[in-house]
Image (cartoon, rainbow, N blue to C red; front, side, top):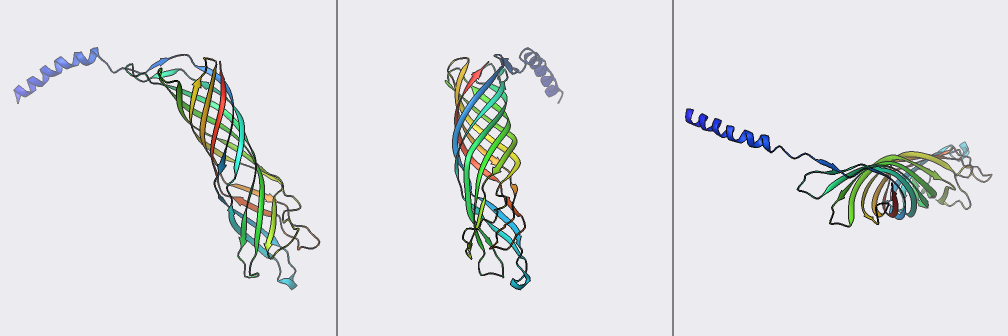
Length: 274
């Protein structure tokens, strides 16, 4: 036992100076940080998402009294184009180990983009014992403007002409619906928009995105890039005007709830570096 202990102490005596002379290599920082501005545009499509409509039709007692409308359905997927701008700061590149040529460049950016109008439509069904069928065809012409704060990491290698990057962002989206329409299809009511007194409303909601991209430096001042974006817009709530026609029973204002919207988007753009 004493011989083993002595051998261990002797080995430790030889190895401690070696560790002292060769400490772990720290990460090093290379290259200056820089600001950049960019513009971009692209297109993509949404998922299908659920929606619901709630209101009350004030039928007289002779016709059964007020009728509650709780209609549910699904809105179709739609394509959309978009354009936007960004302002960012890319920090100094970080070399994780001297033996590796890869460097990481973290960046933070503010970004905003506007999506072209898309008219989402779908069938909503109100299951009621008062009528054999009570169905609506709804249409919601929608504009979406998104504002995000992004965190980005670029991966750089001196032998590669392009720089892969990954990022995520959170922020806010403003969703405006103008000219909403709810037409009863069964039993049919020709020429009646159930939102006719006010078919417009605006709502804001949480927005988040994940980005995967490639950038190419034309020179130290100008670069071009391409991104894939997965955009998430949280659920929204809208209030449209009551139904008011001389030929139709009056209604309460209509409450419309929409589930989260998810988009697959692609974009290309150009940046100026300072």
